Image 1 (spheres, one colour):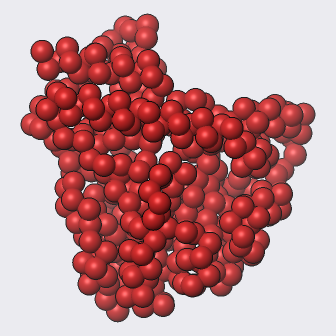
Image 2 (tube, helix red, strand yellow):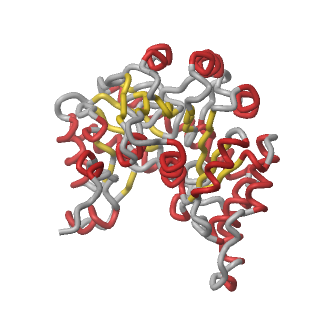
Length: 361
């Protein structure tokens, strides 16, 4: 038998949300609504779809690995240099590249918990230890996170707004934290849901990058831009950090369709604003509905809500699936009494509420 690397023994399989096809086939349903994976209910940016179709005749050609048009567009949007930007095949690959570039055997990485599992996966797969700080629904204190950093720490992972709780860290909180972090420690600030944030004190990315060269800000086209199926993400940091990332980046990882669609999506302000408006209305409606039924809803700055159902949370998830509604149970996040609900269209949100009321009754 060919022996795998010993680090693999520490890893658990990633637990994705169930698909519409899976639930439809399992229960013989015609209508299934998925509010489990934080996808954009309005779909992809129309401008991105148009750009996608326009390059159909050139799919036999390799994409440009340096993606000059996309990187130049991102640089202008955030007022940073093109040499401060890295792109990847989704944010997952960017996290993986951070591991390959900076995490060594015997190191440790620190992160808020509960949070996105890929941070821990990347840490362990590179032979390092993951130190989680925080528990349950409470917002993790960045001061406590800073105390967990020691001489072996290489990367600190912070998701803001955080998946699955929806908590965020203000500009002042991030600044205060960065001042406590040694400059040889990379701070990975994952802002996958930042475009949904409405808080007036949400971090100002460009200014933070100028002040802290060890800050690494991660963004994605999967959420508000609706390009999850094309797998494209990007990140910004100091030139030294990004230069190291490019050395281990696969040459043709971001496909041609993803590149042109992403450029178009960045110019589709109407789609972004429509998504934000739908999201804000959905949060208000679902929060009121769940609280009216006696459940606790955590405040959120993302495109989802985290709801404490209690001991019967798994039962509710099963009931909803049997009736054509997919939400995310949070057992894999060590929050077995909670569910995460993606904000959908008005009729999808109403369908969910009607089913929850039926279950409660």
